[in-house]
Length: 254
Image 1 (cartoon, one colour):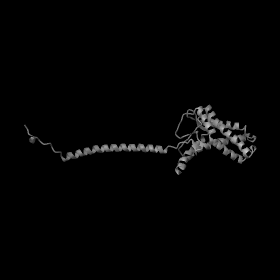
Image 2 (cartoon, helix red, strand yellow; image 1 turned 180 degrees about the vertical axis):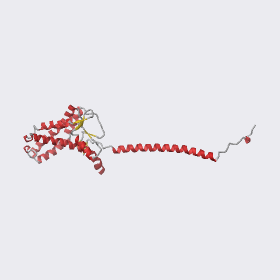
Image 3 (tube, helix red, strand yellow; image 1 turned 180 degrees about the horizontal axis):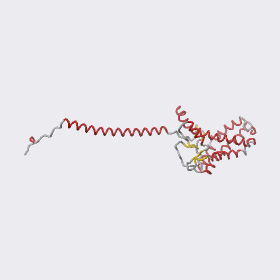
Image 4 (cartoon, one colour; image 1 turned 45 degrees about the vertical axis):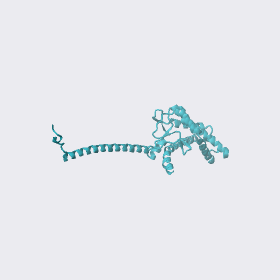
């Protein structure tokens, strides 16, 4: 029987073997470290891209501008809601016509018209102010229903204002003003804005029945019609830039 003392001892590892073993172990750890570091970098890049997208997202359109002016027709940049139903279109027209701000706005414009004696036949003072007021309010409500509800329902057009929200000032300004002539239909395709152009025309033609005879002329009608369309174009421009004004000037100042 061979004793334990007579068994050959295990060969001691050579220096070369130790170096090779250490290099193999370090190599595996290095590969694992590199893989983990690469995954962290990918995650950081993804988070950075998400943060950049969030920061670059245009501010949304508010329901009211300055907390007073109704902005129900505006749709925030990048949002594409389904086309409005006739009921929704009439709701927008009603909200714009009977909102408390509508009465205040008509009061201001009537006061200015009475002060400048825009229609001498309507008189001056409290009586003159009331004569301007009810006509101005009827103009506003009548126009809202023709442009926001009746015509869009007939021609299947979406009269809401879709904000661009990004780009140069000139580009966005031209886009906003041009929405008087261009609007999407129920299929989302841009079409000639019959609802605005024809709706304002019908509204202004009706107003000839209750304004003084001096406005019941072609020139008087043309002047009022151009004013109404131009006012709507400026309103669209104001809608387009208001979220930026609110975010970068008012909130930042606060």
